[in-house]
Length: 276
Image 1 (cartoon, one colour):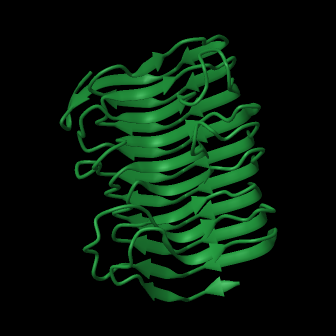
Image 2 (tube, rainbow, N blue to C red):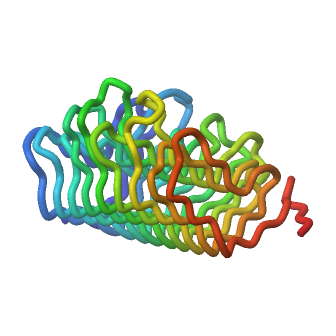
Image 3 (spheres, rainbow, N blue to C red):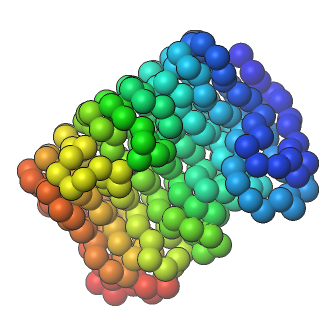
């Protein structure tokens, strides 16, 4: 257990981490009630990480809960050889850079299974809110199975530098299935060209790296350009969401089938002014 730590980066350069997992497999670790920040953030480049997963043997049964990270860093990053039974919950991330919360991998054969990102609060992100998936086109053969992103709160992308995306799920090469995005509240703050929820194959050719059994339900997406955008999906349900967006509430890309799109409440909102 790592708990009650106060860690100041004090303008450490990119690729520094407060808590890092390296080498072989890590299991049964709890990271609770820590405060990780940068009191002197002058180095405006690259990534800084509160918690970094980079194990060659993967990570399993990890809890990251009730922590606060702030000022120019990510709460979680990396994924190494994969992750199983991960809970990232009830954390506060303020001014997160690149991605506030991420589980990604550069490795081949990475397996992400039973990943739970629940009840976190993300304020004023400078990039992506939550990002799950491969981190490079060269990553081969990986998979996501049983991913739940639920009851998180996001607000204020007005100062974002790039990647104005609330939730990004990017597909691995082998399998991407049983993905539930439910009960989240996202307020984009009117940032241009942004997307509330983006389910995407960015690293493979069209019609490869399929998603199966995706559910997007009971989310509130406010003041984004687009609500829910998806592609290379064989089965997806977009149900009972409130989509207050400036542009398209839902947008299907190439190679989409098995779509259920119903019960959504849609209004037009551009720069916090709504008209039903």
